[in-house]
Image (tube, rainbow, N blue to C red):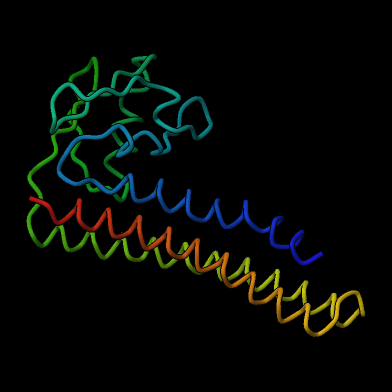
Length: 185
């Protein structure tokens, strides 16, 4: 029973890590990457869609991103969505496509990105803690209902903590990699 509860929680733990890694990928390091802009939401045809759903995104040079809308009438919406995003990017509309040139990161900007990365990692850890809390409550309820004994409850809590520690380790590892990447000039 306890193993089933932990197994059911594992995809939720994994999702917390995956979401954080996607968010970290969007933090730019001075090098162009499709992940910097592909999930920015654009209001086209009356609905919000990610840029990757309405345009082709490519990296023609190491420090520039080229966005080619499939429908040229959406170019101004894409440009304003990029400008309004929290990425602080400056798109240049050429009429046919949008070009984003990434400036060199200053030390101050690098530190700012490290701080954002740490916030995202902390959010992932909070998510893991919330899932852990749900499983702990289920274990305690099983004990209260007489489905498991006290020893089983403590064993379950111990096993759950090992799984939580594993996922927290993955979060720390991802954060450490991103920090190193951001601080490398």
